[in-house]
Structures are given as structure tokens and as C-alpha cells.
Image (tube, rainbow, N blue to C red):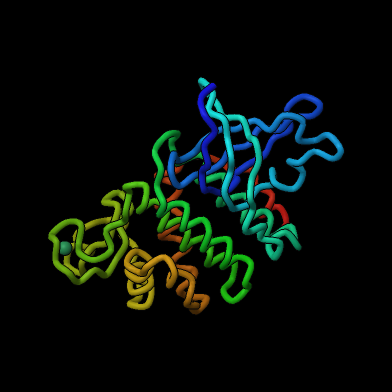
Length: 246
Ligand SMILES: [Zn+2]
């Protein structure tokens, strides 16, 4: 065991181990995704009660071991109670955490990914924009942070800066003349193209500040949905529960 250390982060998942312990996956600013064990977290009167829940955000005090950390304590600054009121909020929040647990690697810290999760859970709690739109914005942005940004500013074939259609095999948009020549491209409205460009260029604190018409949301569903499935070919339980509820 090495010295105590403090890491800033958010709990992505919390799993019961044996009778009394918990295993946490925490996304940290300094070291990326880490696994930490909280001994006796489920015993009555445990100091860990309440701090081992998913979405909790704060400073975690840990002991570093050979392949995992041991949780010693935490100062939680944000519990996100507003998203825990209904099953919808919990499922979406869990989905965002599941995606990050899948995409993030151990040992490599990325403050942008942590900020994305924070503003996404905040947007989920505020109810100002529909949860479904929050999901699509998150999916497009998280892939960009993961190094798989969709090309939305110029044609992926000829580089002309007048994109008109989506082309999944090219991982981006096509101009009008290339779209005519290529099969299986998907024409987009100007609003949809602008929205895609906005999501990829907006600073994190301005990401969840707009709404779109239902028809534009349908376009985003098709474009971001198929792009995300291509790059993250995995089924998430949290999404399947959401689907079964709707
Ligand atoms: Zn072109």
C-alpha cells in the first residue's frame, strides 16, 4: 500500500460485494476511471453510507493498492437528487455513466469527459430540454472527446464546406453534389446540420441550452443513433429498461 491520495471525481457505478462491501467505479479528473473498494460500506452506521451511490460527485480519499484503490472517505459536493425522483431520470443517468465506464480507460485522466458527465446530469435534472435530446447531445459529444468526432463542417469526400447529407460509412456529412453520386446518404435539413455543428463546437457550459422541433429531433435520432451504435456496438441494460418503459 502506498500513501493516501485525494482524487476529484464522480461515481459511475456501485456494486455490492459479499455481505458488507461495495465496489465502486469512479471517473476521476486525475487518473481517469478507477476501481475502489469500500470495506464495510453496507454495515449499519458505516461512514461510507450515502457516499457510495452512483452520480455522487466530490473529492475521494483513497489508498492505492496494486490493482485497485481502497476508499477511506469522501467529501461529496453534489448528489444530483433531482434526477433520482423518477425511473426515467435514473435510467438516463445510469446510461450516461455506463457509456463512460465502457469508453474510459484506467489511468488516463480527462477533465473534459468528467465535465461532460457533470453538465449532462445537470441538464437531466433541470427538465428544460427533453431527456431524449440530452441523450443525443451526450452521445455525439462523448464520441468526439473519445477521438471519434463526426465530420460535420465539410464534405467527407471533397472537403467542400457545404454539407447537405449524412453518410454513415464516411463518418460524417456530404455536400450536395457528392450526396447525389453516393448511395445510402441521408439528406438533412439546415436546422439539423446547424445543430450537429453547434453540439461539436459549443463549450461545455453552453451544450444544453437549446431545443429543437420534433422533426429535427427525428433527424438527430437517425444520424447520432446510427453513428453511436457503429462506434459503441454494445447493449446497455439502462437503455433497455428505458425502452421497455416507453
Ligand atoms: Zn463533396
